Every structure is written in structure tokens, then in C-alpha cells.
Length: 280
Image 1: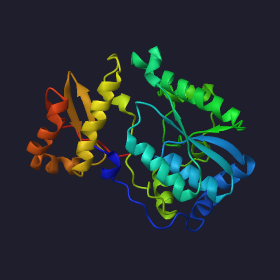
Image 2: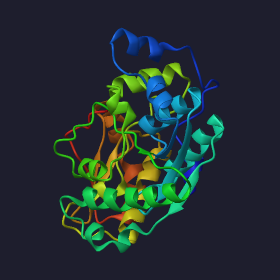
Image 3: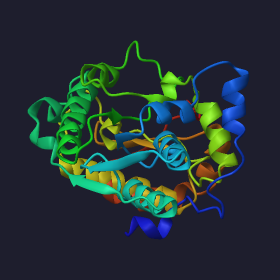
Image 4: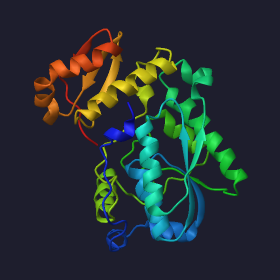
């Protein structure tokens, strides 16, 4: 199924609003993104098309910085993420560079250890850094925000080792603030649920394969098309374990037969996790 047919996110009419963010930063006596981009007017950005990197790129455009977004397409990113990234950059008038990479060719990633994210981030941002340098960019940015806990996230360690700058974090912007400011800026990503890569659906220690990842992507696309959002389908001993926000549980129960029919071709069983997901 073509994921673009079932995209949840729809564009709003406006891209920019008044300088609410600058006022907020001034009131809280901290560096704002305008100041950051004045000091660092040229950089490459690891761009996912999600809430954080979308807002960061929009502010770079607003403050006339030359920030080049790069999207690295691997088996871990579903097609709708690339579609959103392309749509957002088109609306902002920025050219998106897409890099294709076989992430499963890395044994340390494919073996899926507990710290898989470290090896994945190190590989992808290392690749991005190399490409950015060839394109003339010596600074590399990412969309990490002030709400992200860096103490226990292996991927954050890789980011630090590669000396990637995180302007949203440096400016003290939390996820809640970024969503609010994105809405004021007219970005269609303002209420987009946080989306972890497809590899997170498979338990640590289980070898990652492209067929398994594609199966999960197709199954999640089926639920998207039925109107469900901010959910996860996790692999559980060959079964699909569906995690939903509390407010969608009743709908899941009402549609259980249709959902079972759509997901059964991909899994041995279809299970519903009664511990609800909390939105971020």
C-alpha cells in the first residue's frame, strides 16, 4: 500500500507567524535560535521531518541561515517520514538531500544489542558528517531538545562523540514549547506524534532483518489508514503487540475484527497491550 495515500499530517496555510519565540527567550534570559544562527550561519542538519528538526529548519530559514537538511533513508525509516520531510522542505523552499544507506550491513547494528542506537547513530551521523564536509559544511546539527534525557541514551553518546550541535537543547527548548511554537509558526508537524525508528519494535537481542522491518511498517500503515495515531506495533515472539493511547482503546475494541483481518497475514497472533501509551 502506498503510504502517502494514508498520511495523517496535512499542511496548514502559513509557515511563519510573529516573533513569539524571540520574546519567550528574552523573557527567560537565555540564548534564542536567532542568536544561535547569527553566530552559526552555515551548517548541515540531520533532518527527520519530525517535530523537532522541522521546527529547527523553519527557524533557520526564518533567520536566514544557510542550513542544508540531509535525510538518511534506511530500512529503519518508513516511507511516510521521507514524504513528510520532502513536503516540509518544499514548503520552506529548501532543497532536501536524501542519502540511501544499508544500515543492516553494519553487524553491530543488525545484531540489535541493547546499545544498538549508539552504533546506528555513530554510523549514520558519521556518514552524514562525511557528506556534509564534502559539501562544504563544517558544522553538523541535530534536533535533540531540552526534554531529551541524555544520561541513559546510547545514541546521545554517539552524537557527543561526533561533536554534533543541538541548538534546541542549547537554547533550552522543551518538546512542549517546540510543539506550541511550531503551531504558532504554522508548521503542519506541530502535533505530529513522536516516532521512534522501526528497529525499536523488535526486542533487543533479536537479529534485525529487512523482511521483518517491512512487515512491521506495512502493519502499522494498515492501522494508520484506519485512523489510529501515536501507536506502536511491537514484535512479541512472532505476534504483534499493539500499544495505543488510552483514548483509542475503545475504537480498537470496536474495530477488533477488521484489525485482526488486516494484521493476521503478517503475524502469528495479534495482541493488545493493556498498558496504554503516553504521548510525548
